Image (cartoon, rainbow, N blue to C red; front, side, top):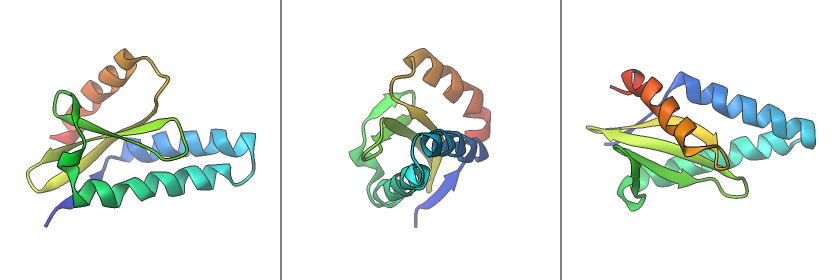
Length: 105
């Protein structure tokens, strides 16, 4: 059985994005969070359908929002390590994933 683990930093990533969207339109932040949660079940059901994009990290795009979820497999556990806007510089994504690497192991 595959387990899902979400790093604490991911909750902050999601909260920051949700708050920003709520400033733009009331309720949009909740819609963002629902879209984010909707990616978890497909990741758990079939993580290998998503290609590896950096080291052992795989990526899935959120529906309706320009955000991506980065995750990796560690044994029987899927670890969600980052939620980030897709317009961000890829070097920033790599730096954040490296900084969270010790949390993933």
